[in-house]
Each structure stands twice: as C-alpha cells, then as structure tokens.
Image 1 (cartoon, rainbow, N blue to C red):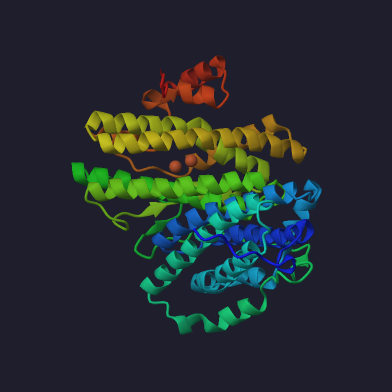
Image 2: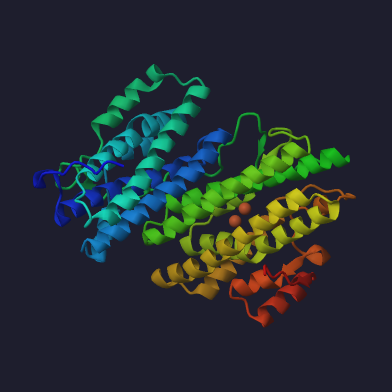
Length: 452
Ligand SMILES: [Fe+2]
Ligand SMILES: [Fe+2]
C-alpha cells in the first residue's frame, strides 16, 4: 500500500480536539442505539426486526469503543454520564414519530450517512502512530456503518418505500442533526432518547400473524406429526422474538446504568435475533411458515406491566433466562436428539450456551441495580417470582398430548419433564444445595452437561 500523504499539522487534531469530537460521536452512537431499542418492538416487519437486532449490538459496541478511547485520552470517567444525557433534536424527533417507515428513512437516509461522514472526517484528522488506537476501531465502525446503510436502504427499497416518500421527515431530521464543529456538538444538555420512555404494552408483529393477548387461549395442536412440529417451532419463533424485543427495551430504558450494561443488553438482543433465525430455519425445515398459527407475547406484556426496574430485570434475566431457559434449551436439545434431528439439536446447544451468558448477565446486573436503587434484592426477587406465577396462572398454554417429545414439553418447565442442567447452574453461581433444591421443587431430574 502507498504510504499516506504527510498531513500538515493544521489538518490534524490534538488530544483535546480529538476527545471533544469523539465525545460527540459517542453521544450520537448512544442515542442511535437507544432509538433502535425504542423502535425494534414497534417495527412490524420481521426482516427489519432481525436487522435492527444486529445493528443495535454493533452501535452499542461502537459507543463502548468510543468510551474506552475517551478515557485513554484523559477524559475523566465522571464526565461520561453527561455525554449520555444530551441529545440532538433530530434524534428526539425520530423517537416520537409514529410511522415506523419515517424512523427507518430518517435512520438510514439521514442519521447514519451523517455519522459516516463524521467518522471519515475524524479518521482523516487522526495523527499518525500516536492515534493508531483510534484509527483501528474507527475504521471498523465506519465499515460497519456503511454496511448498515446499505442493508437498511435495501430493505426500504424491497418494500417499495420510495425516495420521495419520506422527504418531509428527512428534511426535518437533517435540520436537527448534531454538529461536529460545534464545541458542544450542537446537543441540548439534560434531555436524551428514553428520558421518558414511550410505553408499549405489546410488540407490533407482521400483519400476517394473528397476535393474541397473553390471556387468550391458544388453539389446539393440529395432531399430525408435521402439524405439531410446525406449531411448536412457530411458538418458539415468537418466544425468541419477544425476548429480542424485551432486550431492545433494556437498551432504550435503564439510563441509570453504565454503558457496559447496555452493551451487554444489546448483545443479548442480537443473540435473541439469531435464535429467531435458527427457529425460522427449524420451522422451514418442517414445512411451516410464519403466520400459520396465532402467536402471543406473554413475556413482553409482563415485562412492560411491572413498574419496578429491579423486579422486571429479575423476572426476565434472573428467573426466566438464568433459572428456567438454561433448562428449557437443554430439554429441547435432548428432544431433538431423541427425534434424530441432529441439526436442530446442534443449533439448540448453541442457544443453550447463549442462555448461560444471559443468566450470568442477570445475576450480575440485577444485584448491582438493586444496590444502586436501595432495594432489597431478596424482597425484589420474591415479588418478581410472585408476579410471574400470578401471570402464568392466567395465560393458558395449549392443551393436548403428543407422541412427539418436543411437543409434550410445551412451555411447562415443571414436573417430571424438567431437566435441571447442573453444569449451567454452576456457571451461573448456584451452589450444589441450590441445584438440589431446584430439582426437588420442580420434581424433575438432574443432568450433567460439561462442554469439555
Ligand atoms: Fe433465546
Ligand atoms: Fe436468552
């Protein structure tokens, strides 16, 4: 490669100017991640939801890299929360619009292109050698942003959202962007996306899916092998989708937590998006399709109905993910093995690995948040468990027995069907006594499951 043309000193930024501009890019990435978190459960199209899950994670990562470099460039860590509590009018506008296509057009046609331009200009002003750590992550963020724009624009075009269709909102967004030249980035201090989160009681799903309320009865299983397998895979697609949508809300909400919390939440959101993909693959291999059955989002509804931030985090991340889902995925994997569907069993084993890290995330952050908010962890845990039990009691699962092991499992994690994955539980920090109590309380059995 040809060496870069030497730059004049005026074209380069010093440490101070570098940090000032990086702090602006940091705010932009944090706000974009929050915006995606707000919209992911509100955008009705599946492909868009899956793309947004990955983008949310990558943008949360970009913000984390920027944060790290800011600290290296001698920015006091105490300043970071201020950078997450300021915003540009364009971003607040995109939080409040009501049409998901206006959000997507604003994001892919205006906001991300502006970010790309700023990354490129910033890179050009990085002095050689001394600022290579910035260049390294900025080039990666830039490449990812370019890919985001390409993928997002392609989806808009695929659905026939033409360039002139969103001109009005785009010009308003353009007028309210951040400005790299401005000392404070042109941001308004004190406000930010998610300061007063827009409530959403249920996720918005594709029009072809009959979306039932959590309390509504589900139809009986079809009663044939193919029909029952399609039905169970269809149910699982939507339970992974609601998980993706819940973790998007984790990024949109919880402004009291450090960015590392949102970075990890965003990773879980992307994990759940990949679980949706894996279940779509299973559904497809058994000859089913999305919209073939009704679907429900009980977890999302319950999460959104709880008001205590600590209790809702315990309910989802400690109980549903750590305690229950590590076992559910183990049971599903074993059921697929019994059926001779080794591909699905392999996919499920990867999902189980993800669930262990989701449970660890829950153990760590729920305790920290409880402490920070002055809440007693054990009381919050008991309340979350009661709320979950009360909620489960009023949302019926489909009845019926089946010859197929996977179908018989249903969503019920109790009784003799329960396999308590002792290895996963140890990784989550459970003691041997905790594990045995879980086995006796559930009436299930124990499985050892070492990876190596
Ligand atoms: Fe999952
Ligand atoms: Fe999970």
